[in-house]
Length: 388
Length: 114
Ligand SMILES: Cc1cc2nc3c(=O)[nH]c(=O)nc-3n(C[C@H](O)[C@H](O)[C@H](O)COP(=O)(O)OP(=O)(O)OC[C@H]3O[C@@H](n4cnc5c(N)ncnc54)[C@H](O)[C@@H]3O)c2cc1C
View: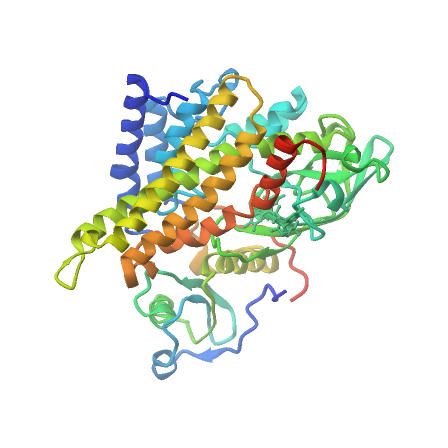
């Protein structure tokens, strides 16, 4: 596959790179090392800049007002946008705008008015609730939250766990079992407002990722109107799966981005730090760490771009998305680990972003479908059959 | 599962007690003599001496500050947000020292249980 950059792509990437280095990185010197939000005045100023550049709302489809940039270019931009301390989970602190939850584009007109457009205007926030205490890898079997019809409404009962951003959200996309006999064909997707009686955020689940944390939810006879069914009754699983596949490409791109920055830091440090009378960069043990980093990086970068190119071309990309997600999350974890080793004691400190990336990358091997499940998807596709 | 509230013993805000605090990262609550919360806060990765310096600096901002409690945690950011959310659920408003959040949202957590 040919990934020679066009002159336009080169210009875009240079602009994004300069933006990250000149506008984002300097602000991080004053922020808490775990921060993932900018002070409001900086945020407003930088949003105005990305709007001026024509890059705001990058992932919003063109027909909804997005800039209409192809996925390969957006993936290349995502590599750049992640190259700062908060870059893995809060690339550029969100000043390029979000696209909202992908499922909302499948919503009917009334739902779009009530949920999608307010999200795009920055007035509402949503969460995505698939995982339950009974498991997240195999939601088709694990979902125990039920929705039972009551007149025109549905009554939801159950629990969800590890749901990111739920405590600050206005609504959620919630998957519940509507037909216990039908397995994956018995799951429906609901739009649940967080002020509906019976909805409760029980607690925050504290993990390695201190910001953008997840929460535990309870649904106790939550009455959801029939007009809040997203898509068709009993077809919710397909909606969940579609989002998960698509999300794996930007998810991988974020991993590649922080790893690129870690490698840049490792090389710079190895060229300036002396031990036993010479630079670390002259030691073969250190050189090989840098070489292994480069191999991990180039592999992850190429596979991520391949998945994006297939999606752009309208070809099936489920296998490629699974491969890039697992290669990028595992490869980036190794790159950051080696970069920390090269930095010695400083690599462990909160003075440098490496320790944050190290913690957050660990989550990337479990989130958006654990890597074992990515291997399972690839195995199904290359071997055939439907084993699990 | 740990409780969502900061269930730690109150300590007097005096110099010797503060000097003996750990330099670790974590969250804290500062209150007046009657126990009314003045501020919830955290000692983050940029604090000079962790909880020790962060609590001393926060206490100096409140004339009525008389006591405090703290919890050591590396997940200081999510724990701090949780404490704010629980306080808001309990009292309907934030402590005076946290009232100025700009447009940053505080989470909503059900205020039942520990
Ligand atoms: C910080 C954080 C944020 C999250 N945010 C969200 C969110 O917003 N919304 C949401 O719905 N979920 C979210 N999750 C949940 C996440 O998607 C799940 O943790 C994940 O899907 C795994 O589910 P589980 O934890 O129940 O593990 P399980 O499904 O119990 O699996 C346990 C382990 O076994 C492995 N495994 C499972 N099946 C197989 C198999 N057949 N072969 C080999 N190995 C197998 C898995 O890979 C995993 O490592 C989040 C998780 C975290 C940590």
